Image 1 (cartoon, rainbow, N blue to C red):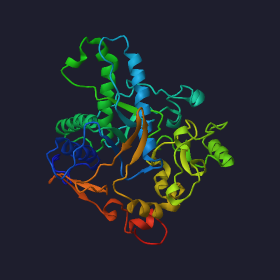
Image 2: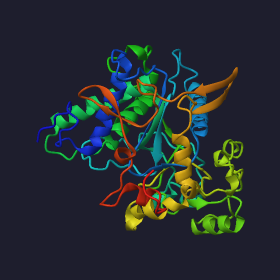
Image 3: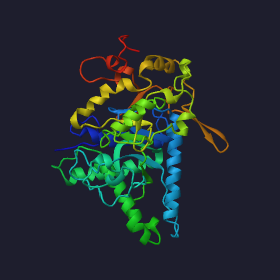
Image 4: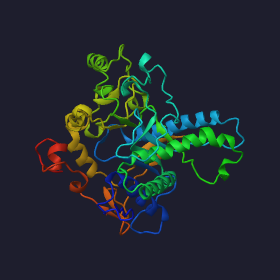
Length: 411
């Protein structure tokens, strides 16, 4: 079986591996600065990578970015304390990857996940009572401590180095194991992260000058242990659902159904409650506390993105049955039309900073557009994509019949 890893249209390449090569192609093209067709990315430009088929966003970019910086700040304080006795600088975290409860490598029989060597979750060790983390218990009662490759966020430069390492390991595995199953990307991402953690815990502490080691293992990667950014539903099938925080009766019933009593989720996190009303652009001033949001009733996490990867007992159907539970679904057409007609120069987010505020600008095509685009590797060019190319439905029905469900046709 031959794999041409340098031509992404080659049907012999397992599709999930294209996440590795496709993202890396864009990051490398945007880094060299020599193409008039691909706008340059600075090394510290923030990049978000998420699975396309089953991930929904529910919170605005401001909250995503604020949480990104807050999670890294907490992690770097912990790392500084952990390595305070060392003469060299402690490692720093800049990349955050989704965390899940199961140590698995879908469609991959090669990668070594080092399940017992990776760090324990910082969540409370009694989160699920006496069942917490017991091997005989369901995955539902384990704290998230393993990598899930459905969501990444980090600086372009650091992400590029991480993806290069993953790509190199992928190519090595394909050469060394030509007949093995290696169609999944998650195992490779998890293996490289696990090697970083083993390096930190067992190897780096024994070296006087770890920066002179022959092989690089530090890629500044950490996990979203509290699932504030990305929430994989696999392993947490009953732990969360959509709820309005103001509806006390529904909140109590949903918590009980999840096995949580008394109710733990009492109020919204401050970053959500202080955010502008989600439908203010439509002159609706109703606050977030009266909007349907996905929440975990054990951890009380209300994530930025929901990764609908639960599949047991037909739960993949939630991609259809849960779609109309999102707060934006009833207003989706109006929101899309309003955003499409807005000023293209507007910022993505405004973040409070030490000296004033930080205006976060979108990544734009060479003509200044921030429309959706596809990266064509062969010609190293960003090509504008229509709604019909970006938004598709399985089967024969038009995408708008599934996404909008209002009987009014396309946008």
